[in-house]
Image (cartoon, helix red, strand yellow):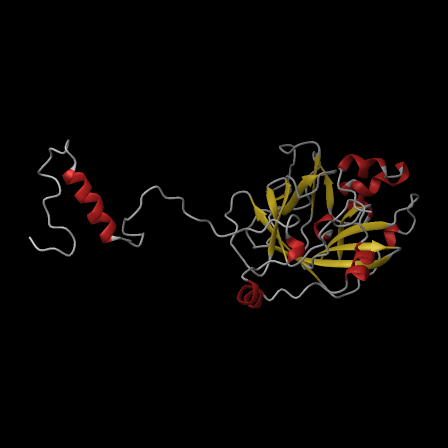
Length: 300
């Protein structure tokens, strides 16, 4: 089940399994070099500093810090940990079998929360042995790995792929979203993210949607050859998209000036002649300096 509400997710955690959500406890049990704020690092180096528990996700307040020795300057609710390298995977396990595996990519110097792209991978990942003895019963368990090192666990599915999509490209508040006709834009606000570009979607995603069952019902994603669709029907969207997908369209300029250098000039000279003659023949007309040029089609 997709637990999109942190309160709902929290209430479904068995009390004996709460240690899993504490990233410091998890890291210590896994044997990583780590410690709470107030403990000293073993050597001067870069370390990951982040909250011990973060139900809101999105990498809030996680960052790399150069620490010489002491850590007293950081928030007491945080912890430090050695830095891992390698592919960053988010894996949904169902009955201990990997059902959804997505790979995250990010620019080297971007903030840790600021992902460039998530893409579904066709691979299997082994269920972590450390989670074999959980007391609670959870249909889905989401795990995040960096270079095969387990770093986070959630008793829910990955919500970013609840639309049946295979690609999720985040759009951030400090950026202008590029228009890409090969993807659809959906508004999905969370932290500093405004939404996603996705390749296709379930037209009616629900909170408890089962991705596997949806795929079996829906079949393969619709063929979105946008060039063919536009040439054939004059649109780049499917009929099932309307009222379910927010498609970003090219911006149009609202202008209040007509007949300038950006607007083709259109004249009906015969109508103009008729209007000018009525003005001149009016008994109240006394501005003889106006309209002294010859009418269209007539000489001076």
